[in-house]
Image 1 (cartoon, helix red, strand yellow):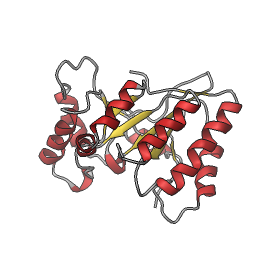
Image 2 (cartoon, rainbow, N blue to C red):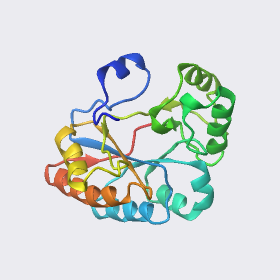
Image 3 (cartoon, rainbow, N blue to C red):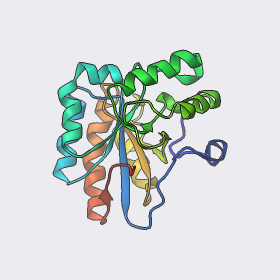
Image 4 (cartoon, rainbow, N blue to C red):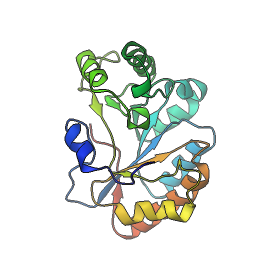
Length: 214
């Protein structure tokens, strides 16, 4: 079970997490979790380039190791990256020491102040310990920021029809929305259908697509 839009009680429970970017202008923040992926990520990059769009990629460390050239392409094309742990760990099901160490392992590869917990699941005690670290990679200047979302596209849901996934995004998106997609095998059927249509529709409506601001 999941909610397409982030519920108010979670935002209140975790007020220091970033759920949406305050925007008066027509700007949308597309994010992609779980890559790099050998097929999905190049498709995303090609599609974004077609529309002059920038996005943010929350990468898994082991996938960065597997596909370093694709990760480098993300950076070279001006997109933002973020840490999504090294092995896609569920914070609720992982002891604190193991969870923090996995984040650090990914940080050795992904030099970013942004972190998104897989499944959106992180214990408050883990977040407190993560804040205390505040130096996940050498030369880090910016405080660690937990990035959640305003809208879940549902592209990871294998029972969801692609057109329903598209409706999730078109119906709920507003200026400043942080939208979650996945550049993964599981999400491919829905993501590859929805992304070009989202970019086309909102470009026509005068929106810009940006990477998360540091």
